[in-house]
Amino acid sequence: MDLIKTKQFFVFLSLLCAIGVFLMSSAFQSMAYWGNDLTWYWVGVAFTYFIWLMGIVFLVIAITRKVNVKGKLIFGLSMLGIATFIILICGFLWTTFVIIAGMSGI
Image (tube, rainbow, N blue to C red; front, top):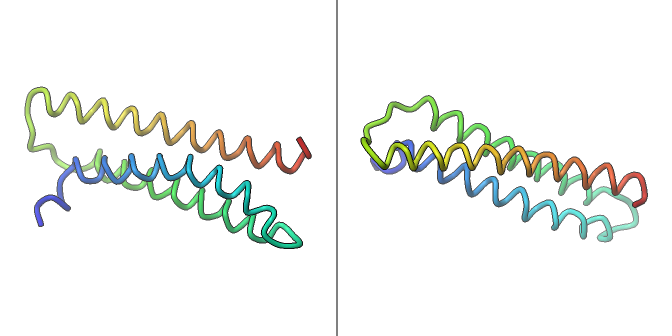
């Protein structure tokens, strides 16, 4: 039960959400062809942004947690948190780009 309360767990969840944003951004593009309108496309977009938001929330929770680790582990955890944040921002920008490009007809 201590694993769920640790900072590492929340950084890992945030990283999984960041990866999920990129996976869902390719999935919701194909969802545009599921029906006669764009309903499923926008459902996919909403789910992708929800995953992104959950990644940000997990990262904020990880940052606000007290650190009980020392040395190289704290450095690695900090670098993983920074990398996860960069991946989340890139995922948000990529998803937004895909939406703009899809609506413009590119």
